[in-house]
Amino acid sequence: MTETGSRLSGLECRACCTTTDADSVHGTCPTCGHALFAAYTTRDMDGRSWLAHLTDRPATLWRYAELLPLRRTSSIASLGEGVTPIVRLGEAPGSPGITLLAKDDGGLPTGSFKARGMAVAVSRARELGLTDLFVPSAGNAGVALAAYAARAGLRARIYLPERTPKPMVEHASTYGAEVFRTPGTIKEVGETARSRETARGAFDMSTLREPYRLEGKKTMGFEIFEQSRALGAVPDAIVYPTGGGTGLVGMGKAFDELAALGLIERRPRLIAVQPEGCAPVVRAIREEAPRVVPWADPRTIAPGLLVPAPFASERILEAVRSSRGTGATVTDRSIVAAMRSLAVRHGLFVSPEAAAPYAALPELRARSAIRSGETVLLYLTGSGLPFSIEELETSVADRVSG
Ligand SMILES: Cc1ncc(COP(=O)(O)O)c(C=O)c1O
Ligand SMILES: [Zn+2]
Image 1 (cartoon, rainbow, N blue to C red):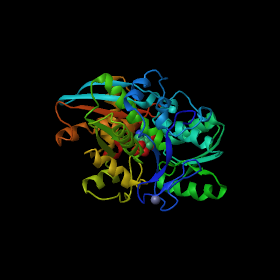
Image 2 (image 1 turned 30 degrees about the horizontal axis):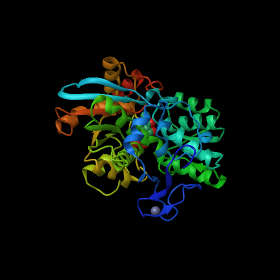
Image 3 (image 1 turned 90 degrees about the vertical axis):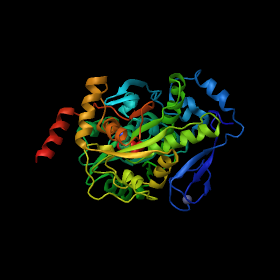
Image 4 (image 1 turned 120 degrees about the vertical axis):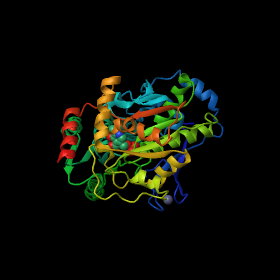
């Protein structure tokens, strides 16, 4: 048993079934280049007593230590991340009988759910002796890496698309990281970053190209499960704004691990929401395709959802399908209207990405993808603070009239 109680046993590739040692540095699968997933030995673990003891632990994501990869407490670089609130929103507008909940990750360090993944991945990078990290990012992941690298005493270089909102660029620089703005969407920015950084020996912290950010994201599912005990039951569906898809894969992994411990029988359906102008995952769900085909000419006002070709898309589709979930698209205009409604009706100022699930409710209701009598949880992935709703309203209005 390790000091933290972590039961990490190795890294597994779900594409070629190779198993790799977890205590040396790995990015993707050494055999086939697909994503690696942390595996844990839980056969001899008593799920019920683990669950009962969680409440005695601090209210951070580190309470799930047995199912996280950190071996030593001293490796943990924490800013007090998690547990975030679930807010009751009452009945969905225009959808009587549907109870809406919202899990709000906007209050996490650096203002988004990306803190979860980076807290765990940066801590594990430090534990494994890495010193130089880089990430291509739409904004939030870069800011989170910058903060956690500062906390851990590691160097970080952040690559952001040229059009990233200025407050996010400044926010990332504030922590002392080197920040580069390069042309294109996250796809091209990723190519530039990898071509520059790999030669320098820096480690790629891109989503699903290293195994441990997913472990941090997994805590979204653990928290929903744990908090649901107070709410009476796990939600029937979780509606999630999907870009790179790690949130969906992470929550799917959390529910798999809880099921293996005998703790969960009925899983929430995972519903992926994407903007109409960049919806490669939703298109693949609709077409029942095995993987995502890159989206040509991607556009949206939601920076984190501008991901035309998510890595490991097979795993995203697997997470949605195995939960009996589905996908929906929303217009940029409806995203901005949802930002306004969440602020005015509920006091929640969220980012465009985080507003997308709320915008998707009418379509989901019309298709009976969510039904009367059900409880539906909207995942609010980020704070609205780097954004101006007024500017976004003007930009979508200009686009319609222009
Ligand atoms: C606020 C916000 N929501 C959602 C996403 C997309 O998340 P995922 O990669 O889990 O699909 C991002 C990604 O940048 C984001 O910043
Ligand atoms: Zn493999």
